[in-house]
Length: 313
Image 1 (cartoon, one colour):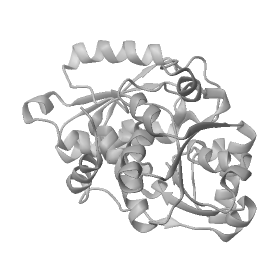
Image 2 (cartoon, helix red, strand yellow; image 1 turned 90 degrees about the horizontal axis):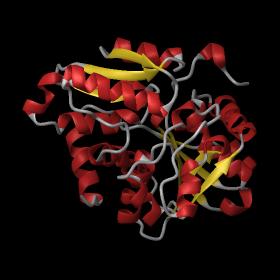
Image 3 (cartoon, helix red, strand yellow; image 1 turned 120 degrees about the vertical axis):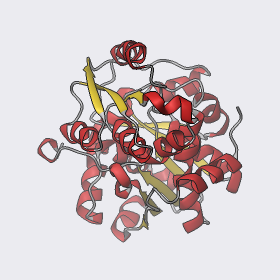
């Protein structure tokens, strides 16, 4: 399947009555600090507190009736799990979510509050995938992968669609990258609307598999990631990597110090709550100001689900 802008627009039509159209916010102080003109797409205000609800909603609503009789199942560090649980509730089916046992408490609670059923596993991708296989055999539920799924990618691309409708003169878009669903969806949308726009993925230095994969021309799996950005610990997928490889200008890594600095600036100057993964885009810009100087830059703030008793600052 080759996704294009029409798939993103179809996804938007399908999910529009269930999602929030999130605001695009600005901050003169951050403009001054960065030397750029910044426009933040605030997916921390999305239902479930993250952009993930867009993709999960699109995937669940697209399920054939006979496939959804057994519910749906996924693995997730939290945001996709909560999103799938809420999306499943629209169709009154069960969402089974495999979660690392060290997931943030706020994310565990969200999955449960939206009606999801959690199975815990060790905090490695191998453990997540092995547990998923076992649970699929037990439940017979179809897997809604958190990013390596075309319906997920199409749903995530609706965030960039709204951003470019609200701010059509952007020169650059920066989005965090973990498994690549949001970045791939952003690529399809942005290239379809503004072919010459610059698209950058933002990634922690301690979880730099996407950057390494782009340089190598093949997927290099994530191994022993170490970063505060817990939503960016997964590897790129076979469906997301080709889209990213074809369309992004670069994937730039950022230090933990600048992720935390960016997160604190957003909290202090914009007065909004974001999780560390959401701050990675601004962190990249702060670490590489000359690359974006005097440009109009759209940054997708991916979510705001953070344990308030575990703040890094």
